Image (cartoon, rainbow, N blue to C red; front, side):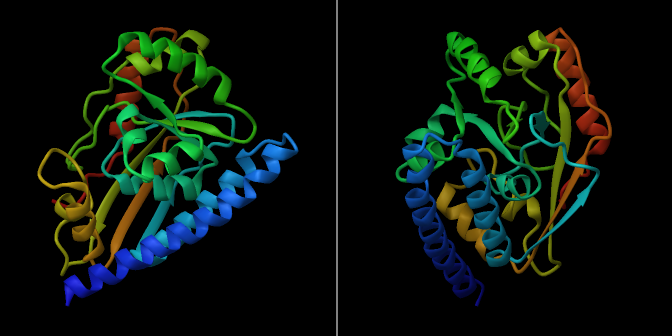
Length: 254
């Protein structure tokens, strides 16, 4: 029964994503033709898509604290590809992601078209390029979200923050906001660590997506920090932000 439920959810997810993205792609022609900002249209699409994903996966999202309004720079712990759903629902934003994501078949193109900023973490010289892009990407229509852990985790703790991509907010001495994400699942489901959190090399993407789809319910809690952090030293900024996220972080179910 759980596999049938999983397949049904994945079919719905595929059809819903293709349908909404098709509308987005066609509508994107208008801002391109008339040289308008595309971010408001992108924000509407991503919120609409995220609401559909919440319904398909039977998610219940709880938000504590006040989400910042654009322009903003915010950091979050990272547990799963599912993280973008509650974040897109709460924030008008775009993400900084690994360059490898852009090479994913079909998905890479779609992700690129919604304005995600890609960085090659294997090249030190790419950090400067990305920081220049970041400085131009914060505007009244969107803020920037960074996962400074550099990878996802199983939800037991917040991994150390890498300071390299915090060069821009450090140099600009701009305020950096914080948010934490945690997951729980229904009692009859596999723990969130195994069915929601996507980390390590335990499962391939499609295999894990099937495990997620077989869950009956996913509970997500987002906590926004009460204060923004500033520092002109990126290592100091990384340490302070890590401490702040740890203070509001709630471990996912074991």
